[in-house]
Amino acid sequence: MAAFLFHLGRYMILMWRVFSRPEKLSIYRKRLFDEMVSLGIDSLGIIMVISVFMGAVITIQTAANIDSAFIPTYTIGFTTRQSTILEFSPTIMALILAGKIGSNIASEIGLMRVTEQIDALEIMGVNSRAFLILPKVVAAVLINPFLVVISMFVSIGGGYLIAMFSDIVTIADYVYGIQLDFRFYHVVYALSKSAVFAFILTSVPAYQGYYASGSALEVGKASTRGVVQSSIIILVANYIITQLFLI
Image 1: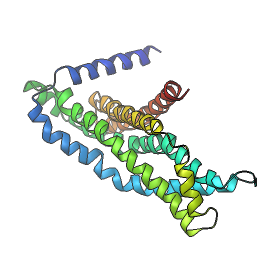
Image 2 (image 1 turned 90 degrees about the horizontal axis):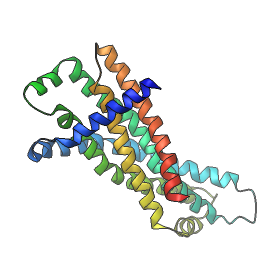
Image 3 (image 1 turned 90 degrees about the vertical axis):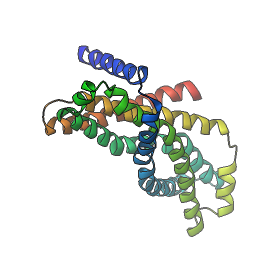
Image 4 (image 1 turned 180 degrees about the horizontal axis):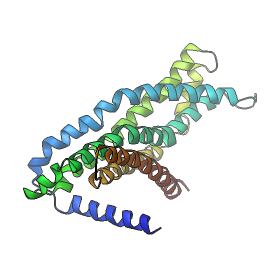
């Protein structure tokens, strides 16, 4: 418990210093766009591949579990849409990005720490916390909702492909199902979650990397801790946000 409170307090202090004294905005402009490409655009390929198969699997599994003639087949499209928007696109994508992005952030900042590059920034009077962490956090919070929207469309499109090339559901029924009782509030809920998750999957690994010490082996351990901890926090945050927004 004492260790948890220690790391929580140090994390909060780090975040306070990240946002309390940023350098000139002109310094961050290029770094922000570079981080948006690195953290967002470069992850677009894996997100689209996973999303299309995710939507296809949801469609097949839903059809396989409908064993009653009283359940209309358009339920398949409805279930695919709801599962994708409410949970799979915002949460599963965040967990995947936590592994891909989180490890890179922790390794990058941790390597700068053990090679004393961060100390050099401090000696030059640069707020190293804001300089290294703020562009990553802001870039992820801005770009992640767009990635989630793309994931939603691609995932639902994956289900559409199943309807097109199989006989488990007709295209007309699938399209009717994804249009049935659509609520824009659910999209707002999903995008709100994605922004929170983006903050977590960048700030937690950055914390682990910033306070890494020792050798390259310790940097690797910090990277692993960053991925594991951010994934767990994302799941906890997912439960809390769902309770607040949907219950």
